[in-house]
Image (cartoon, rainbow, N blue to C red; front, side):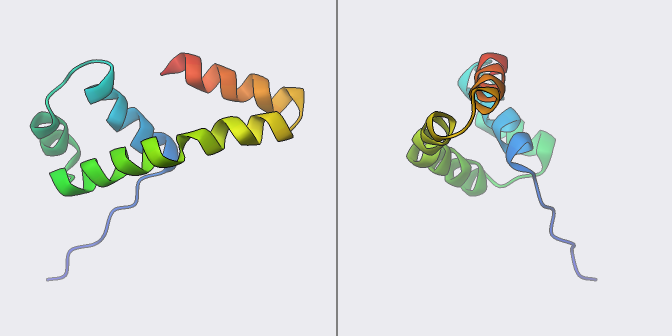
Length: 77
């Protein structure tokens, strides 16, 4: 039997990372809950911190509506 690969959206990944970063849930519990390996969790976290500035750069280049949408997303975190 072949296991099917699960795909998480960018928004889902941020929500999962948020549980650890803002709500201080242990990585082990988060990984068990979402059936994600700890190495995958830490890869998402690394990508999030390395490429997070790009989200703000895009907001500056985009319209005011894009900036407002981004601000709303950041506020939700």
